[in-house]
Image 1 (cartoon, rainbow, N blue to C red):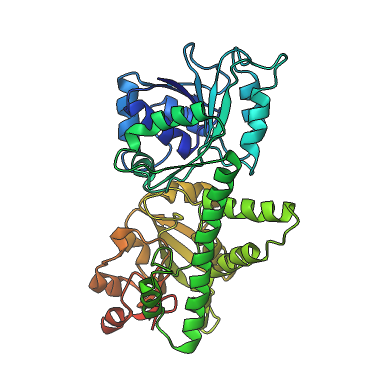
Image 2: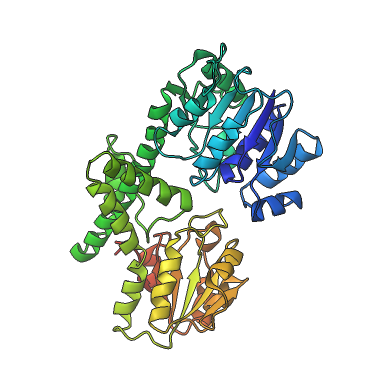
Length: 431
């Protein structure tokens, strides 16, 4: 089948590559910008396991090709797959309005873009805006982006669920056929109306964010009650009504899509006349939590931080990602700089993005080696739980650091073990 994918988002690249890998002829239409330049040079702008290799393979065999965003679909195409940035709804409308033979060819438009609830219906109206009305009308379906960054390719090719919002039976069947190679273990497709699919995606994100912020609040309370939040977490997770997913407290969540979806849900509630008090508080808790390690450091040194040196391990918003969008490390570094702290950073993938965000600063030093970042440090803060940080060489760390102080923003280290090895240790709600 011929499929035209529009967008340069992670979702667009994963969808185009996965669809090409199952025999479809895919033309990926890219907006102008850095991502298009990288892709045209043969580079993948996202550091996702397996994505660059599979994309290169599909381009070599000719099933995946690139084109500008403004280029029309392939001559034999009937499927347009939209995976655009959330601020590109107007571009999506223009693309649909300009589809060749829009009023006589039965187009299927798959909307994976995270637009506002009801956007697929708006795009459907654009598709059907013909005089006279089309005899065999096309359809816009909603297939929300549920990818997990850091495991994006596998979360498409082995999806736990697909939310398929479609009003036309033929459109639902055609999307089901496109997804059939990724839907063989069990039927993971959940049919619903387009508006319901769009809202479900936002509601899922809102629930996950609420669980995270709730656990962070409980961890902060555990600190004041002399309670170990790890025991509490395990007890909560053992209750089948709750489960253990997204119950790990930490120093806040980040990520462009995750944060933006929560804010979009809050805006949707406010636009409907309902107060978004819960989600507003979820976001407020998260912003406060991003400074929790700073507050612990500030108290440890009696509010005197000027001239100190602090090492950060991890600045990406999550492991296996090179992105720093809304990452907790950014707000943490700003708080440290405001107190005159020199910050030394290591991250396996995100140093380039950090350098672009921060610019040249005398109080920021980037390191390719994690231990080099800790040399002479008054504290080490673990912010992103990369697996390479889970089992550090404690003897080496203690020799390198000016003061053996560990602040564990992800609770990956055992407090008792660290203390036995001569470190002062602070976790999130840990004893």
